[in-house]
Image 1 (spheres, rainbow, N blue to C red):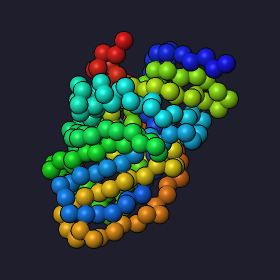
Image 2: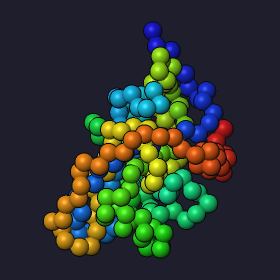
Image 3: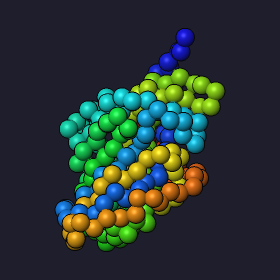
Image 4: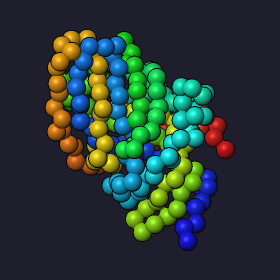
Length: 203
């Protein structure tokens, strides 16, 4: 019998996933990418299950409190690089759709997207319902706080950017085979996520 715990983990968890650019099309600086993949064991030994983000998307997403932010490398002290327009789940995982801002930094990031030079995406979340297993945790429900474009490496090597839309050739295609080896985030990035935790005053 699996015993599922609720709200025992009190620290923010950061997980990153690698990406593949699907295509570049004419559009409005829109990026669509997975921030979680369901059912596989990631490089931290954890498994996130389908439906884990259903409640938090409804409560914290654009149609709820609209509190999920899009940062670069979890840097909540800098301006967001995009506005999250959509959060959703499909059979593969959970994804976000974001409109990239027109600031200098965000435009630089967007240029990297177009050149297939962004190595991954990440999320900051807290497990709500979970059970420990031999390698880590089975996560059945999670509370999402932010998604990030990252310039380091992923915890889950099976995810991908779904789509990048930009002004230019609507038929242009980008590299679909970019895979990045895994690593961990810095202590500063983890500290930044804990700052978000404090700012949101999560009980």
